[in-house]
Image (cartoon, rainbow, N blue to C red; front, side, top):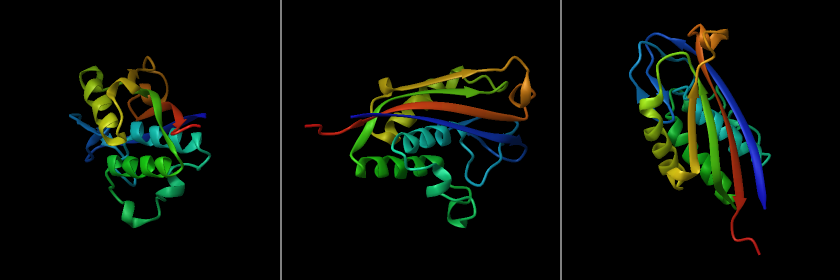
Length: 161
């Protein structure tokens, strides 16, 4: 049995925060503002996984009014989402994701992001696609006010009979 999910996340850029995308710290003058580390890519991936299994979104599992998730490392949250999916009998078939950011240039970090996500999820990097694009200086991402990400995931039921 196959299940498909879509996830989306957005966070505002601000000074005084690290920029973490796909579990990788990226040198930049600003970082993303959020209750956790605000990794929009991993948040979109988690929402896609949870959505595929009709389990809500990450706010349901990791509410932003719970101080135990303050400044949380999103790779740890992703591990927990993967565990929930495995408990339901599903594994990742593949993930296709896109980061929307005017700056910084993300091409030098894409391979590391793919490898990091695969490592956290216990799958092969060939199952993970990460792309980056700009919005040609349009909208909040184009004006460098924030970064957003989309993810689509195919979840596969293990041990089908």
